[in-house]
Length: 452
Image 1 (cartoon, rainbow, N blue to C red):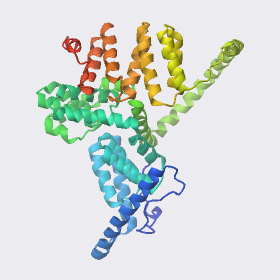
Image 2 (cartoon, one colour):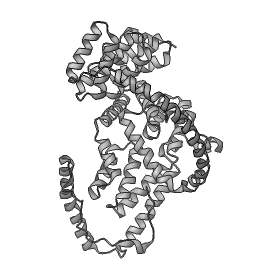
Image 3 (cartoon, rainbow, N blue to C red):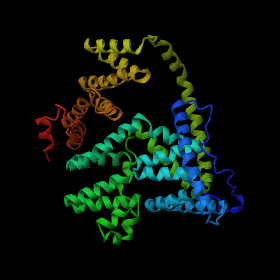
Image 4 (tube, helix red, strand yellow):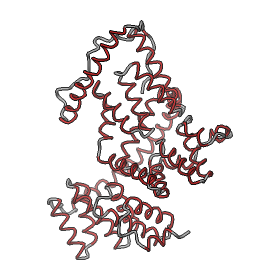
């Protein structure tokens, strides 16, 4: 996000205090349009009352430009603090800015990003949605779409599930879910806070301090650090500068969902946008070196091009020899693939299920095809593919799906049979925490979880 200019001469006067959200008559999404209109009605009344009160008091001599200038300074300070991972202070600063200048889209968007990192999802949505209503910008719309998505609802369900487990004193189950969330999205702050508090409650100071350290890496001045460990600030400077290898490793792990996928990709893009001005000099210095490498790469590309030309005829021939794909509906294709599987023609069955997954439109057939791909590959001994599709099913759908607990159980057993006890236990802990009433939470699972 760009820094604000603090040149008061460049700041425009507010033309009308009664100017509210822009309603785009060409807005295609009727739900969003209706929501915007409802926001207008509510906020028009609220701001009219505020304007009348301000007129009656008439005490402030600060001009509109000066107010905006003050909000821009606070906004810039918030960005600087966020760049240094002082997220708590940055959020406090941006809240001050929004009190002064509540209609500024950049301020609203930055507040939304910080609230999202703090896992205050309702406030994050409120900021992004309000910003989008004032000005239909891409950043706000992307996050509004994201937080409104089914994928995010799945993520939120897992997050809330973990909180419910804490209330029910199921600490280990809560820890398991929070660790999974950290593995998937290490920039989120609240999971580190929750795990620090849980381990403190359980008397495990070693793990408590470990998560406090990781919390400090993402939110240097989080209030929980001093509350839990008054000596935490005395940690060696070298430790402060070091980066937890696991945290770095986590950043390369799977996306959440598709859900996360978009979520933290968008966060990363936003953070990059905030930081890119400071990195321009460094990038420019790298360009000249890359130009040299590009010339060498051109030579290699020329050689590769010659090799590609040699194989183009073979590829074309192979393409022409392919048997034509039968154009049928996804339901018929799914049914046909099930029959092929029953008849033992696993190769063709797998091909059919893959076509349903890649081009299908109906959730029922897509989800069941993913599950069938997992169990069919498992049946023919293709463990890697089976594990891939069991994970795809689990990460795409919710515990309400028909085969959700079965997918977790089969995944855990595959890991166990393959000698990977750690991953097997992780799968079974997830099964127990996400589908506690499943028939698969049996003595065999309990026995595996008790192994060391």
